[in-house]
Each structure stands twice: as structure tokens, then as C-alpha cells.
Length: 260
Image (tube, rainbow, N blue to C red; front, side):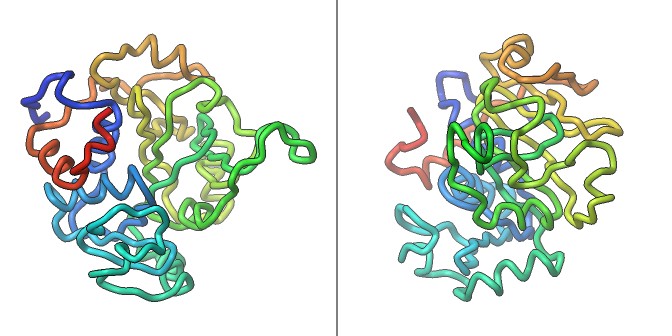
């Protein structure tokens, strides 16, 4: 494992999440990045270890360099200025069905132990306690990307035994249920939270604790998880950001949005 040259006081939890997400992107990959934290993670990856990665947006934009300016939606002008390709939703989403997307970022209100994600309803679907934003293109990405990178806050009501509604499929009921359902993509490869990193492990493809962020403990992570969270055999501490990674992040986040 690489060694870090930074201390806990040198970065925020959000910055650690961004850099942990950036490490999941490999060079020359095509990535559905999405907004905010994922697009920042993509930018860090480009500036460090993945200079030839390509970022894709559902709105029909493909970029090499991250947009130079704040984005409030994927369709904003800065995201189109200097893009490698500006096309349409069908062309971009068609890359998924063609098996040409290596990874996609997904978030949600709930995720369960088999990586299924809910962004639709909390409670009875006929009389929900909360109506969430819905799916967008997330189900397509979850179904067809080679792997998923999930980012979510680590709270017991968000990491649940079983989601009330599957908006974006993970491993469904676990084991080979995903393959039996005919979903071509590989499913969740990693879940990055503000406390830890979880990965599917074992024949059931159940999410296991893989690393604990500095300043947190495995016991605390388990107390904030809605199922009996097991650990991978090689459980470790999440490597803190290196100075190179933080410099790359600060080059993108010039106003320090993610530092607090």
C-alpha cells in the first residue's frame, strides 16, 4: 500500500470521499460521472493517475477535461464548452447497451446489503412517507455498466437490510440473482461513505466492510449500518489523501466548496 504524507487535519471527510472515489477510476476508462462529488472525483483522477479517462453525461456530453466553471445541471454551458463530443441522450445511453461503459457513479437515498438502490419512495408506494426524485438514467447505468461506484452518507436509515423499492438494481436477492435476471453489467463494485468503504464479498455478493476512514472505527461503522455488517479478511484503514491528490483536488475546487 502507498503511504500518505498528510494528516487528518489536512482534509475534510468530503475530500477523502472524493479522492477515494477518484482512485476507483482507471486510466483510459469511459465513466458516467454525474454531478458534484463524482465529477470532482473524475477531475482528480484525470489530474493524477488516469489522464486518458473520458467522462460521459446523460445529457449527451463527453469530456476529457472537467468543465471550467460551476455546473448546476449537466446541460449548463461550461459543460458543453470544450467538450470532446456534444450529442444526444440516445447516443450517450446507447454506449451502455453496447457494453462500452467501464463504470458509472450512482447515489441514492437507500442502499441495501446486496447493493440495490432506492431513489423512488420511502414507505408504502401507494402512500409514501417521502417521494424521492426518481430514477433518471441510473437504472440503465446500474444494469449495464461494467461496474458501479456508489457514493452515499453512512447512516442506519440509509444503509438498510432491504430497500423498500429497487430503483437501480444491485445484486437483487444476492448470489447469482443478478445474472439470472439477465442484467449484463457487473453491479456494485464499491460503496464509498463518509465513514468507510464497502465492497461485495463472497458467494452471496453481500456488501462487506473493506476499509474504515481515519478517525472512525469498525464498531462505529457497524452501529450505523442497518444489517449485521461483516468485514473482508483484509480489512484495513482507508489510505488518507496524498499531497499530490489534495493538490489536484484543490486545483479543481478553487473556492474550497468541499473543504468544510
